[in-house]
Amino acid sequence: MTTPGQLAGHTERADAMQARDIAVNVPTVTVDDPVAKAVRVMAVSRLPGLIVVDAHARPWTVLPGTQVLRLAVPGSYQDDPALARTIDEAHADRFWLELADRTVGDCSPRQPTKPVSVRADATLLEVAALMARQHSPLVAVVDDNGVLLGAITLERLITSLAVYTAED
Image (cartoon, rainbow, N blue to C red; front, side, top):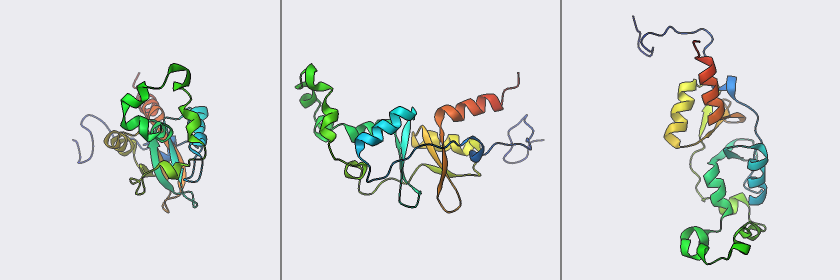
């Protein structure tokens, strides 16, 4: 018989995985870090996004990779695709140099969205539902005080689910 909260045909496992079990340490950035550094951190670490933390290591925001790219592309080119087409090929990949001293905070909304985060004891279903709802391939895992413990990437979640639930 299936009890509320239990999937039909499945028995509950005593070793159910939680967010803390698959979270990994990831490099973070702050609002005071240069955008160029943020992009480099994401690229070198091969992350699908970035976690921006405050001075107390609490997630300030979680940015999917497309939003990190948005920080790097000057707004004038984002707002007017015709302007981007006027830049010749020899200079089109040099927009990166226009970042100069711009920080993550300079390029972020003044009121960031609530960080995409879960507590360490969240189930993998909770993590998956949050990722799907927020369209975020990266979730911060926090302790009871909101301090960052680690992160879960979409790849890590899917791999964990596939290996954990394999019945081969």
